[in-house]
Every structure is written in C-alpha cells, then in structure tokens.
Image (cartoon, rainbow, N blue to C red):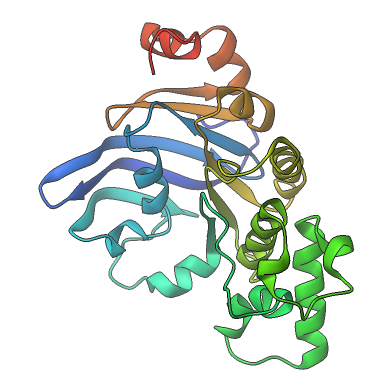
Length: 258
C-alpha cells in the first residue's frame, strides 16, 4: 500500500515476522498505517491477526517463546530498538482486548486512573479532569458520572468494554489497538463501539482486528487481509470489498472459504 498523498504515517511494519520459538505465526508483513485512520485486519481464525496486533506494542514478546524479526516503526523509530522501553512504549500504543477486562477490585474511576498513575501521582483536580476526558471520549461519561466509585463489575458488558477503552486512552496514546473488541457484545454494544471508532480516529490512529467482515466495511478506512500468517492484500476498504486485486481476497470476501 502506497502512502496516501498529504497524509502523515504514524506506524509502519517492515518485513515483520512473529515467532513462537521456531514457528512463525506471522511472516514478513510490510504495511503502512496513516494517521487518523482506522485499519481493519481481517482473515480466517488462526491466520495471525491477533499475533500481528500484539507485535505493534511489543506484547508478543510477553508470550512464551515470543520474538520478532523485521521492524515496527512509530514515527520512523523502530520500537524494537534496544534503547526503547517497552513499558513507556505501551503508553503511546494502547490496546483493548477481545473480552472486557476491567480491574475487578477497582472502581470505575480507579480503572481509568490506573494507567495515569503508572506515570506518577497527579494533583486530584488534574486526575479528575483526565478521567472525565477519557470517559467522555469513550462515550460512557453520561452513564457513569454519578457512580464513579462503584465497582466496574456493575457495568454491562458493552459498558465494561467502553470503560476499557477509556482506560487505554487515558494516558493519551497516539495509537489504539483493538483486538476483536465487540466479539463478546450484543448488537447494541457492538454499534456503540463501532460509532466510537469513527469519533476516536479524529484523535488516534486505530488498528482493529475483526472476524466480522461487515464490521470491517463499516468502521475502517483501510483493510488488510491476512491468510496463513501472511499479508495477502491491503488497500482502501472500498476497494478491498468491491474490487480486490487478489483472487484469494475475493474468495474470502464472498464467503467461499474462511
């Protein structure tokens, strides 16, 4: 995929390969992620989508036997360089997982504040403002503003997932990674998250893994099709879904396999 004209690139992979021991789960993937866009990663189960996503903020190396070759560039700096602190990096590249993962012993407020406190204590007023900002950006403020000190587990599944998004964006990262964020949600919760993607891309660059082709078509500007650990095709979502260049992409989009 060529860089779009007059669009700033935030993230790029160059021949990225992700391995578990000697087994490659992702093979030599090169892809660009323009700023303030949503890129959907699609493909059948087991094709390396989530592993690829975890490589983008160095979470793959936390897996047993996990390591990578190639490069991941954030603003042209390789995030796997020896002088890059992975903990600090993950504040710049936030991630939300398939199932809502609120901290069970914490209140709604403290869940959002958790990521902020990693950077040290802040004055209470500043913390309150940051928590409110994140909850507003995640479109859940009006639903929780009167019970911020209640348990996060009192929220519905969809609300918990939006809370997790608030927690991820509270430190104001530059990139937001979403790993099948609506897989465990009902249609109403799914719609909320999808609407949120359109709003959040005004501030963040978003990469979303989804098994739902209709969702990819609805929320993304670009779509990348993975198969057997490799990148088959990437391009504007409208092109991928209406005039793919690779026959294998067309077969997957039209449901002939997957």
